[in-house]
Image (tube, rainbow, N blue to C red; front, top):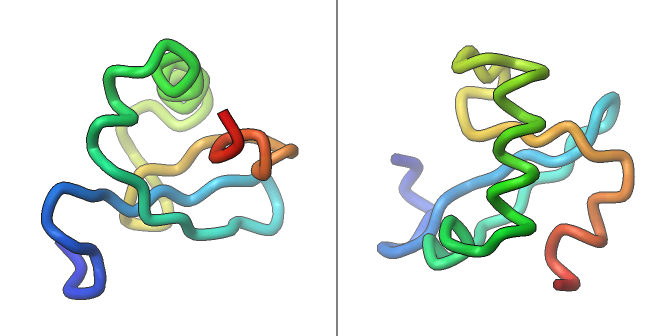
Amino acid sequence: MAVDVPKGHLAVYVGENEKKRFVVPVSFLSQPLFQELLTQAEEEYGYDHPMGGLTIPCTQHDKVLSR
């Protein structure tokens, strides 16, 4: 895990062409909206995430953290 990611958090890369990095609490993993985004990521990338972290294909990345 990256040194700049605090305990209880994970790095998430969001976007399709221009990716933006967010550090989110692991509690997001239990949220239905976040789980839906994870399903999209699995369909798009499988388990091979090119950024070395969790990558979510979403063009409106601001909506990820606003819910």
